[in-house]
Amino acid sequence: MVEAGAWWTPLAAPALLFGLAALAVAGHAVLDAVCAGRPLTPVAVLRPFLAVPRALVERPRRLPASDRLLWRTGVVTVPVAAVLSTLVIPFGNHAVADLSVGVVWFNAMEVLTWAGLWLAGWGPNAAFSLVGGYRFLAQGLAYELPLMFALISAATGARSLRVSAVADAQYGLWYVVWMPVAFVVYLAGVLAFSFLGPFAYPAGRDIADGVLGEASGVDRLLLRAGRRLWLAAGAAMAVPLFLGGGAGPVLPAWAWSLVKTLLVMGLLLWVLRRLPVLRADRYVEWAWVVLLPAAVAQVLVPALVGLDP
Amino acid sequence: MDATSTVLLWVLGALALTGGVLVFTLNSMARVTFALLGSLVCVGGVVTVLGLPYLGVVIVLMMVMEMVIMAVFMIAYMMDPAGLMPMSMLHNKRGALCVSGAVFAGLLAGIFLVPWPERTGTRPADTTFQVGVALMEDQMLTMVTLGFVLLATMVGTTVLATRRGRYDRFGDDLDRRPAEDPAGGGVGR
Image (tube, rainbow over all chains, first blue to last red; front, side, top):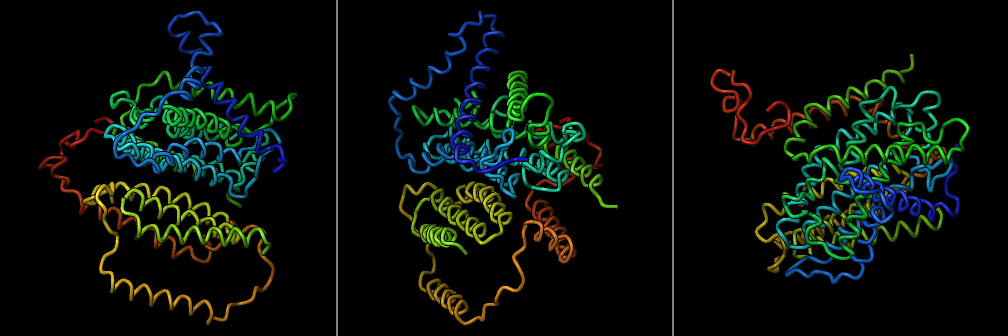
C-alpha cells in the first residue's frame, strides 16, 4: 500500500527527480564517450555539468522588444511542471500526494509544457525560437492523443485514476505484458514531451536550436534542465503505470522502483541517440493514421477484460 | 467547508476575476491569451476545491491545450499580435457595457433570489465515479449524440475549409497512388 503525504516527501521527490535527471545527463555523456571511442574517465562524465556554473555566471543576452514576462513564465513553467508531475508518482511505498485523479494530474502537468515551450519561443521576439515553439505545438497535436490513450489503457485496466491503485492492480501480471502498444506509445510520448532524440524538432539544429536558441544563462539552463527533468519524470511514471510499481522479490519496494526507473531511463537514453529527428508533418500523419488507432485498439483490451459478466 | 478551502476559494476567485479583467486591458494578443488561460486555470482550481477534482484537473488540461492552439490562430489573424503598437481589445464600448452590465446584474440577482437547495444525504466518497456514472448511464444517449455531432462538425468544417478535394488528390479517375498532396506525409508518401 502507498502512504502519501509524509512531511519529508515534498523535499525528497524533487531531490530524487533532480538526481535522476543528473544521472540522465551523466549517462548521455558516457554514451557520447563510448560512441566516440574516447576513454571513459570521470572528467568525461562530469564535463556536461560544467554548463551549470557557466550558465550561472553568463551575461544574459538582451533582445529588442522581447516580451520578458511571458518569456520568463514559459522558461520557468517547463521545469516546474516536471517537478509538479512527480507529486503523484509513488516511489516504493511513498508518494507526495496520492490524488484520486493522479493520472489526469500527470497529464495536465505534461500539457503545461505546451504553454511553457510556446511562450519560451514567443517571448524573445525572434523568428527561429518562435518557429521552434510552433513546431512543438505541431508535434504536441500528434503525440498527445496517442499518449492520452496509453494513459487511459493503464487506468482502464486498474479501473482507477489513482496512480497507486494502477500500480497495485498489476499484482501478478504487469501491464507492459498485455498492453505493450500502450507502453511503447507512452515511451514515445515521454521523448516527445521532453523534446529529445527523434522529437528534438522544436529545438532543431536546422533552426539554430529553436526554442533554446535565444535563451542564455539561467534561462537556457532552466529549459535544458526541464528537458532532463521531464525525461526522468516520464521514466519514473512508467514504473507504476506499466511495470508494477515497487513490486518485486527480495529487495524493498523503493529499490525496485529505483531499479525499474533507471532501466526505463537507460532504455530511453539509448533509443534517443539511435533515431533520427522526425519532422512534425511526417510524424503527425503517422501518429494519426497508425498510432492513434493502435492506441484505441489497445484501450479496448483492458476494457473487454474488465467487463463484468 | 473548512477554513482552508474557503480561503482558497476566495483567492482563486479573485485571481480568476483579475485574469478576466486583464483580458480586456492588456494590448498584446499573447498576453491576453495567457491572461485568459490563467483565469480559466483558476476556475479549474475552484472546481477542484468545490469537491470535483476530476473536472477541475480536466479543465486545466483542456484549457491549456485549447488556449495555446487559440494563441496560434489569434496571433496568425490579428493585425498587431505582439502589442508593439497599443491596441484595445474593446469594441462597441457603449453597447457592450450595457449588455455585460445587464448580464452581471441578472446573475448577481440570481445568486440572492434563487432559493438554494440544502444538501440532502451525504456527500459521495468519490465524485469522479459519480461523474462517470452520470455520463455513462443517465446521459449516455446525450453524450453519444453529442459526440457524433461534434465529430461531424469537425470533419465538415475541415472538408469545407480545405481547397483541395478528392479529385485534386487522387486524379480524375481517383486512381492516382500515392495521392498528390502539397506536403508529404509519413505513411508511405
